[in-house]
Length: 276
Image (cartoon, rainbow, N blue to C red):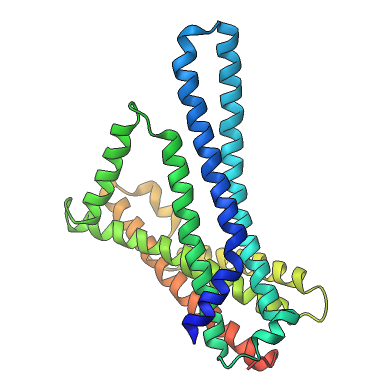
């Protein structure tokens, strides 16, 4: 039943998001074609025209960066709005009449967020690399990729491999665990408000994020070996060890609160909002 629910939820949000990301890729291709034409025409145009091409290119790059930020934000906001309606509006009433448990409903939403987070990341990476990959930049890009994957596959020693794996896991746990589940938990908290539920969701999300960020920073001062003040007196080798410890703390923190947010969301749905 979870698979069917996931397919339904994914289908209900995907049309607009597919269009948005397709527009991003088209915008990228147009920019790449424009840059190609500008490079070929540079030898045949006047200095004034060349400056105009440069100004147009600068505006395009600024627009490209803003477009990417807008796509990423729009994806998160749209998913949040759709989940809010699907769980807590009149549509939500129909959702909770289905013969599925709240846990399955929550996992379905999480899977949809994960799916579109991956698609969003891939589209952004394709766009960026399409725009920055040229004959001059390709060797550096390939060198960076070779170093990253070489370290990931253990070609540069166990210590470097372990450090990269922990850093990667810490980032993934935040991207796919902490923030998506914080979003769901904030929605559940926001709907405990008698009125202004959207405002309650926003306050819950940003409030919890600020409080937990402050709390995690304070804890690093308490745990031996994690204090930021240590960095000034560390050698390069010790700095690597310090960074590894910090990433382990971040990984554990993200996993712990991801679980708390999920359990908290389920508790609110079943015990407070009576949606069991």
